[in-house]
Structures are given as structure tokens and as C-alpha cells.
Image 1 (tube, rainbow, N blue to C red):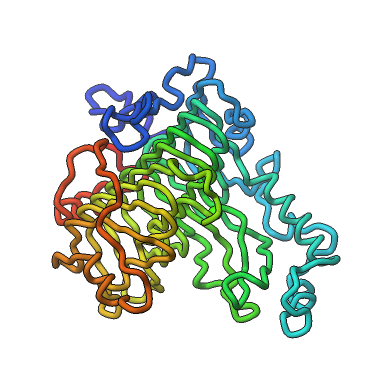
Image 2 (cartoon, rainbow, N blue to C red):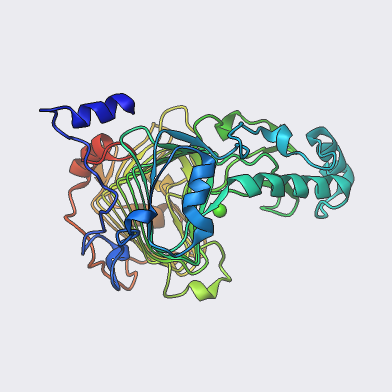
Length: 422
Ligand code: CA
């Protein structure tokens, strides 16, 4: 950073890293441009422009999620798992009241404990331990905030950024890495076989409106879930979503970002019974890369979601389930997206439906060839699932230029992610 600052001020040096901190969303750039648009902290006075290098400085600048217009620039790498003196905290440091994974596994083994919800000493200790970690890593982002990375090396590690019941937020040019849960909870009744539930999304929009997420990189780097052990015959997952958008969130644009090396990338709408989400969860996803993502890219309930010009990459050795999840009352409008997958993934695998009724798709490229995902879905799933119709009931109007899938694939490979704003 010192070297970079020197270059920028040196006579004759061309400043190819411009100050992005007061940028606002363009007038037509997706759903976050509707109803007044998204300006984040652009109105901040000089006293509310911060450069932060440590968790403590970041927490102070976030100000408990206050609505005061503020610009926060992240310099270098910040580790959320640190104490107030900046010392790294590992999972053992958060353990409370005798929590011990071996004892936890012994106590709630389905063969002896059965299918009841865990309760008793080890579950209470797990819960207290989880609260100790949450107190460090859950960081609230309030209304009228812009959070940006400085230059090309800004990283926030181990944090769960949460925009809760807040309006007008911009998050840009920042790598969000490894929101690692030290204390997953066993849920015996999830999905028939039971499953491990983890607490943290790297970025969670919870009742958030007017949010622009741009040029972020979000991944599990450092702790891939694929390397975690299996307990009770289920992968001991450590991460929840990379970017979950739930609980009445609305008017969101996610652009030029990379979502990588993760299981459940993006959930838009978290419950079939959350009928308050009707008419909300309007999200635009464009020019993003989903690389080595197992599922939910995104999975949608209720929302009108425009997914255009995104690049999907599934490496040969990666686990894969599906990309586009069509769930209850979703209105997904997918345009000119490119998928590159290994041979064992077929075009019929790209879409999955749970109670979905419609999917609009056009211009899809699958390993270089045009495909009609809707026709393929209906052909492969006839008899087992309801056919999806092409009528999602709306046509997107707020968007920039829509490129062909082939052009977008190349542009996204070059330009998506943190550190790549031009
Ligand atoms: Ca989540």
C-alpha cells in the first residue's frame, strides 16, 4: 500500500486506480436503481469518511449500523476473528462452558439420541460458544453506507456483514472471505437425513432495500467445505450463503462480482411461507461469475429476478447440483448467460424447481452451444415435476446494455471481482 500511494503521487505517474468511494449506482443499472436509486454514503461529510485497517477500526466506523451517511474504505486485510487488541481468535478461544465437539457428537448421535432437537449441556455450551463468536464476526451495516476496498488488495476475512432493515447501501471492490462457523448445530429433521446448520452468510441482506453490490469476491478461501469431515453421514458444513437476500429485502443490484468455491451461493427468499416477500425480493444479477459453486446461483422464491450476462464455471473435479433454482412464486428472467461445465453435467442439470411454475430464459450458452433451458427442463422432468411456463409475468426494463452470452463470458472472466474496477 505504501508503494502504491507513492506511485499515485509521483510526478508523471498515471493514476489508474481512481477514487470510487463516492460513486453512485447508474440510473438504469438494475432493480437498485428503482424508486430513487442507490447512493450509499455519497452524502457523507468529511468527518464520516474512514479508512480502516483493523476489526476495531471497522467496527467503530460502522457505528453499530447507524444511518449517518458514511464512507468506509478497507485497507489491506482485516480479520474479524480478532480481539480488541487485534490478536487472532480461533475456535478454541470462543468455546464456552465445556463445549467439546467429541462430546457434542457423542451426545446427539442419531443412533442413540434419536431425531429430537439437541438439548442439554453440550447444546447449551455450543450455543454460548456460538454467541461468543457471533459477537466478534457479525458486523451490522446501516443505512446510507458505502463500504469499499482501497486499491486491489482489500480483504475482509471471517466476517458476516449484515444489512438488516437498512436502506441505501453500497458494497464494492472488496474480497469477503470465509465466514467460518466454529459451532455448527445438528438439525435432525432437516431434509429427511438431518443436516448441519451453519449461521453465517458472508453478506446477508435481511430486510434491506436499495443495495448495490459490485465487484466483490466472495468465497470460502482458506476453509473449503469439501475438505471438512462427515459427521452423522452429513458434511460438517462451515459456511451458509455467500450472499443471501431475504426477509422482505428489495431493490438490489449485484454486478461484476465473483462467487467462488462454495456450496450454497445465493438464496433469494428463504421460506415458502414468507408471504410478506410477495412483491419484494426484486433483484438484478449481471456480469457475475459463479465458479465452483455447488448450488443456488441463485435459488429464488417470490422475487422478480433478472439474471443476465453471468458466467458459470464448473471445474471437472467440483461437486455440482444446479445453478438456477426456481421455487415458490419465483419470476426468474434469465438472459444471455454462459455455462461451462465438465462432461458429466448436462444442460438438464442447470435448472431445478421446487414448487416453481415459470422460468423465462433466452440466449443461454452451454459449453459454447445455444440451448433452451426451459424446453430441456420440461423434457427431462415430464411426469415427475410440473412443467414450467415461459411467462413470468414481467419484463425487465432497468438494465444496461445486454451483451451476447459469448461476449459476456469473456468480459466477466476479465473484469468481475474485487480489485478489477476500471
Ligand atoms: Ca443464510
